[in-house]
Amino acid sequence: MNSIHATKITTIEEYLMLPSIARSSINVEYETIYLSKFKSKAIPYLGQLPSYPFSEGLHGYWDWLFLMQHYGVPTRLMDWSEDALVALLFAIDVNARPAELEKDPAVWCLNPVSLNEAFNFHDFYPPGYIPNVEEKEVYEMFGPVQRGFNNKKPAAVYGPLNSTRIVAQKGVFTIFPYTVNMIEFDKLPDSEAYLEKLVISKDARKSMTEQLRRYGINYAQLFPEIGYVAAEINEEGY
Image 1 (spheres, rainbow, N blue to C red):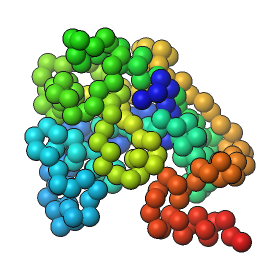
Image 2 (cartoon, one colour):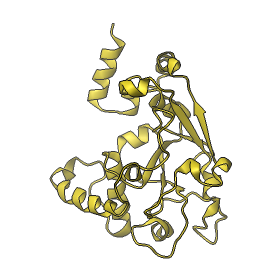
Image 3 (cartoon, rainbow, N blue to C red):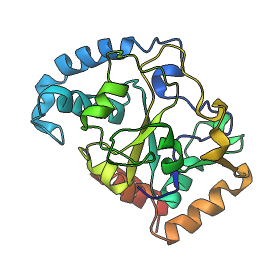
């Protein structure tokens, strides 16, 4: 993970810097219920899923959680990209809802090493280490079972590359602690040490999208599926 990577969720500036499960009245404890339902109802489609078969134990827990995030089920995960241009394309989305198009988008820049200095995942690594979620220490701190870990901050982590979308979008993640009262990322007392917001004029959406297309940054590239290829052709025209 680079020292700086940018989020791709802020189509408008006012969006809360919280994971999806905390952006509504949903309690974080429902994540376990969602996980159980998703595992049960996804069984008929397992052969179509990108990383099937899943591993067992805590590795399997993260496999399922990241797949839930990928398909839009609320979780404590927040999507980021290591590629600033990818983040920019998502932020200036010209196909956003009309109400969003009337507001300025924003790109958030995160220094994951500085963020993770709050954690000591391994005695033999200095603070700032960015772990893979499959490491036992991550589960102990951020798994669904409280183990006396009272930190309110999220951590930057690597997740399973169980989707071609994640690979194409250079996706990385932050995981919020399993706590009811989550604090917005940018409202954390030390957020200025690792987080910065870049606001973009709404009037620049179209021209910047065209510039990115010339650089080869488009939705067909980031969503390597036939439907997005067709949409890109239709949008380009003759």
